[in-house]
Length: 305
Image (cartoon, rainbow, N blue to C red; front, side, top):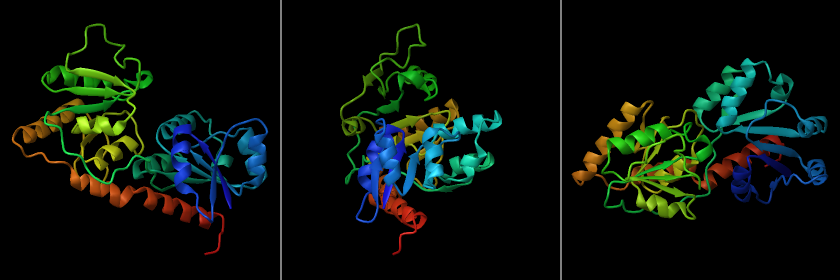
């Protein structure tokens, strides 16, 4: 059986190598003219990593050919679909003819609220480690702030944190451009812009805490990666059962969590978050997640056991 995989390129490139086995071959969609039509003809199903709520030429052909279509919603697409729903810009026929998956319960709930019935099917990133790293000697914070969407990712809160805790190094990654272009005054001296590092593992080894204050999120791969490296996380969402992950829905709560962890570090009470790493390996290991997706596709494609 062949499944054509489309959607966000980063997700497609990362996940396709994990998914294929002797029963189901997952083929990345290349997008070249005419080649996509050939691949669609050969495919038994289509796997969209990133949801669609409007029909297009590709989807029209896939539906006409009666292909099995799965849409795996991953975050921003959920928010966009919600907006489109209230603007009455959603193809309900398309929604009804596809199967829908969401990474986590809260995005599944958001989708169900706008008439898109979604099951929770986890995804994971390719960046996992077999061992946790020791925490750095200095209490150091890490944040991901892409320049184009820095405010959406909490740049204002990170900037204020650097000002409120001038002795704490704050490392920012995500773009070669500054995520603080909205600021006219000089940045705090403890705020370091690392751009796009070649190795995320080396960045995780420098920090003990990841802060991710997004306005909206799905299952953040970076949150899972930080936990897998034995780091602590402050996030605008709660991941049920994840040790060492603290939810903060506003700046005040975020600052309180940071100060609590900083005090523990100063008293020598902060060790690598091994429980958090074990949680990720138990629930989001690549093989576990891939096996679940393959099993679901085997059922969808009616592959006999």
